[in-house]
Amino acid sequence: MKQIVGQRITLALSALLVSLFTSSTASPAAGRRGSSASKLLDLSRSKVVDLSHSFDDRTIYWPTSPSNFKLTTLSSGETPGGYFYSANSFCTPEHGGTHLDAPVHFSQRGKSADQIPLRQLIAPGAVVDVSKKAANDPDYRLSLEDLKAWEKKHGAIPSGSILLLRTGWGGRWPDKKRYLGDDTPGDASKLHFPSYGKEAVEYLVQQRHVAALGVDTASIDYGPSKDFIVHRTASAAGVPGLENLAELDKVPEVGAWIIALPMKIAGGSGGPLRIVALIPE
Ligand SMILES: [Zn+2]
Image (cartoon, rainbow, N blue to C red; front, side, top):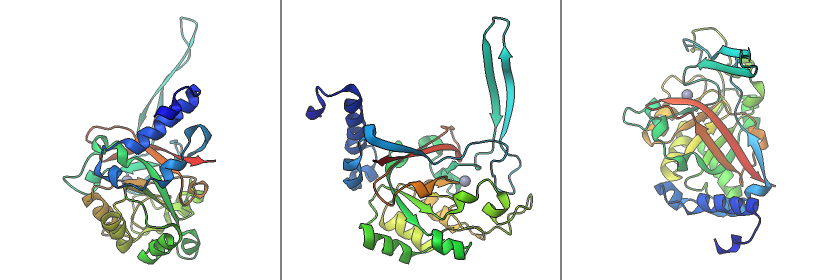
């Protein structure tokens, strides 16, 4: 910390934040984390990329969801006091749009949205790209071989990092039929989109101890899944999911930091998520 004394406030703040990122021992994962990405991050020179879709009346929900995002105007306009005033209420199921899956979503004793250690939601990102394979097979699932190929190129996936699976599906948003593979209301039996595979997720949570699993499709299980084995494996290991992510093509395979902060719903099985990537320039 000594080096930052006397520097400009903005730089000092940046260094302080980097120091916070690298020095906390708030979770076991933090202590095991590789430090290469954190050393490269200077917040004053980082590009910030928004990985969340906006919530509106086109936001995609699971076909069996009883309702979608609803924004209701409570006030909008000139008040008797002569000033403008605007306020809305909103209503949404937890699992729709860009959102978090808390471990309790598929594991009875798993943590709820408000209980997930922040260290699991603020961490270096590792992006694995399967967009070419998914373009030829909409039911493509990330394989162990894909992860081994990534590690041959970049080294072992650092413990405590946020794995982001880039399938290219983010570009299909908000076209529900192209994004989910089917848009029959109330029917989730004919969905087609890529995501994680069973061996890959076992390797990621059991061997690599990732902090969270993100994807630019509607689910960390692929469209045709009936057993939701990826959700169950991740939830059992206390690993949250980050679904319906945007702009993953703008995040490098290594070097970015991810900040994924969901709405803090007490007891929530998930919830709306604002997620950004900080990319060194
Ligand atoms: Zn979900």
